[in-house]
Length: 234
Image 1 (cartoon, rainbow, N blue to C red):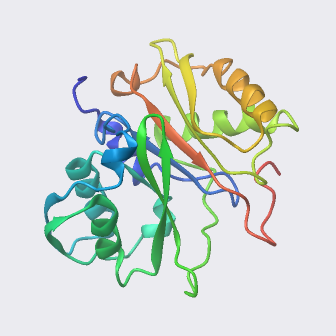
Image 2 (image 1 turned 60 degrees about the vertical axis):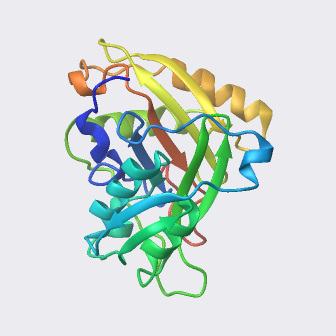
Image 3 (image 1 turned 180 degrees about the vertical axis):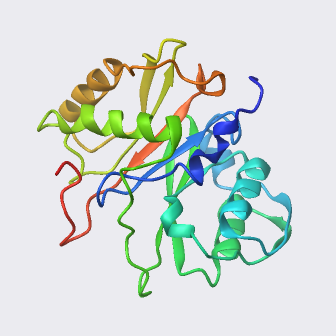
């Protein structure tokens, strides 16, 4: 396995979206997913030992990802200022995440893909937590990567974010070009899926990525724009 890269912060500081589209990034080297299990095993979730104290939610989710090898994707605006509930003892990954999120006003959607399980955080139903309006002006290379990805998707009416949910993963080569891309979960439209993947494979940045980004599988989740929010593509 490649050495853990510093972009594990993707799921924290760097996990912002364009306009009101919820976007999250995670470094799979830090929270690598296990291969999907056969149905017979999936019926009996594996119990895992947890020892996560009450922490700032960003830190707690990072520890959760390292423990379960199942990333929880979120925007950093969504978790800013929140504190997790402690999680100790043996629990399934999904139950532990519910315990960790108690009192935060957040819940999660479980997404099963060929690569394994991913959890997408969202405001819990019935709470007053509003969907974040993330920033385009992100810090450093992660911000550049985020904004260029959105530019590529916004350039084609078929892939303009805001009306669909999709989970995809890509990796960059040393020149800043996408060397591989795949869908972890369909957008619900096979034609759009094909166009989206083709667009991602054309993505090229103007600068070489930091060493910690090269060859690392980077995961991005796009969600529909909340009602009344501005279009993510302007």
